[in-house]
Length: 381
Image 1 (cartoon, helix red, strand yellow):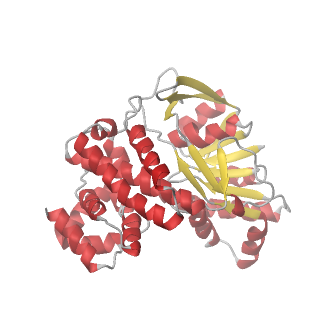
Image 2 (cartoon, helix red, strand yellow):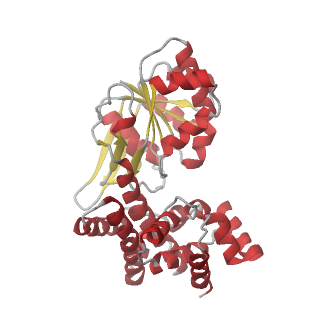
Image 3 (cartoon, helix red, strand yellow):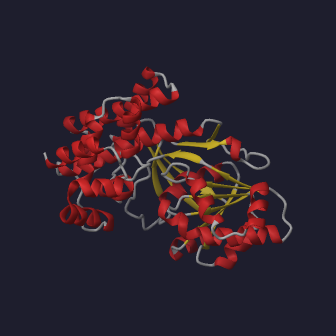
């Protein structure tokens, strides 16, 4: 089996690429980073350092290679060879690769290839593959769309593994460090043809429960740890969560977002409380050095309508649940400043020019004036 994976960064190599290769899938990484691609083509292997309480080891990932994703002709040709396409490029890059994916699918179908192909976007977003499909379809005519609907599976997934950046090792430049925990859950109802047997890829017919569990817990908690930790002068997630005040606040926020999940999906309250504790323990992993600015970057995306802060808040409004801590968490995110982050700069400028209420309305798309006023009051406090 052969897979084309867009994104040869830390998550691509340390998470999805490793799971694929561990299941004897030949992995071709596509990326714009020429040096990484050349190393993959030359070495055909790289190391993944797995760290945690019970493990500290380096595992070799083999049978891999690379292709420059700017080489559109090569990407299009590969689409006619591979059995699976995956991505770990970040939500903003999905739009960029969509036109190439569209041309590649059109070429595959034009060649008479009727073998089903599945595409899985493994991104930190809700139904990222559906989003990619929508972007791809803007480049296709109706006849091709009909063929794609029949033969190409766009499979949504939920992914969870902390993969912080580390200083490159001169002796092993492709080495990536990851936490022991990983979770990759796919919507089995969206596959075309046979579902590939990949160890570590779990199947479900209720994906949104797991997507929102991860979004409302890990993503929400990670962001709040970053924003509140930075406001207290911390540089790393680990030292932030070791502050008792930060930890208590982050936990209280996740408890409010968790109440939405329990109401919406019928999660067992005790099991979810244990899941929250597991997440807090992962943030404190002493072997992972994760910068608060890496976790907090792109605050406008994190404050958007369907992302990790506003979506759980909307859930509390829907079910009439407490949300004081979520409101305060959103206000803390609005305080985030990073002169190297264009979104943080834009956020600060909007607050200065337009005020808190107008900024919240613009970027969160919230319509409830009372909760917007509460966010503004928390920000001003």
